[in-house]
View: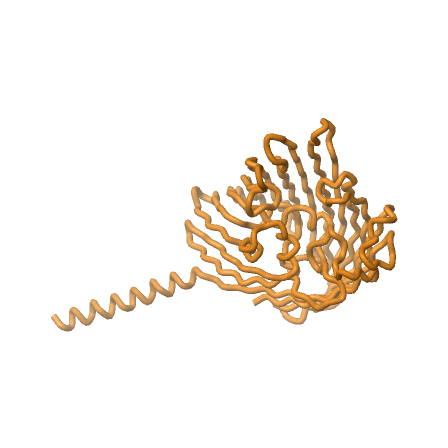
Length: 350
């Protein structure tokens, strides 16, 4: 009897240990830190770069653009993500949110409701565009004007369907245009659709949209936004072209338009060095997205050094130009029709 009890005890202990190991293996913990120094030749006294930038937007000071600690759990039928953040990205991109929300990078749970079909709910990365808040995942040190002025994240419910290895479909119901909490007196729900198609190795074609009302009730101003990009990488080369186009009703019956275009080219020069160039144009003359309205052209060139697979050192020079002489007249600015900045960053993922 004693031998039987001992055998059962050893079996239970081993089974419990195996179960615990299996459970723990479904958890992953990760982190990301990106620091930077940027010098704006307009020399703004308030240390703030143009207001259409939400990343790397502090002048002449060493700062943290983004620091994230993330925990994830993945099972066959259940998944969850929770990430906390700090940095100037969080400070300026979520300036209108309650204090608690400004520290939340992700917070979501998801269930698998059918084969290849997931339902997730919470604060999650947006389906719009080819850039993210993680700089190491982007070709350029800074984000494009299109990315800076469209949602980085959405709060709501998301259906994701992996139709095949080449095609993914996404459907969103959200709290609106990049909101954690709804704006006062606005009871409208926003909707979004995403289609990602990969016709061949190295090529990605993506379409995403958003439809919603950003006006407080009882007034209604419909916003319809579209984003398209094509990205292709082969050997040491890569190219991306993208375009945004949005329309929104006004209180007076006519429609405001805004749009953006961008094109990027990158080249791996040596084993650990990458060059990338970008041209872009963004037009929002009525200030639908950018408060004071803007028509601006931009160009940038950056040089990357891959210190290690999880560490990246970057240097970028970026130029903006606008025909509006007054636009860049920031406090203490030295120039008015253009804006030039040199930025360097160090990023580590762990």
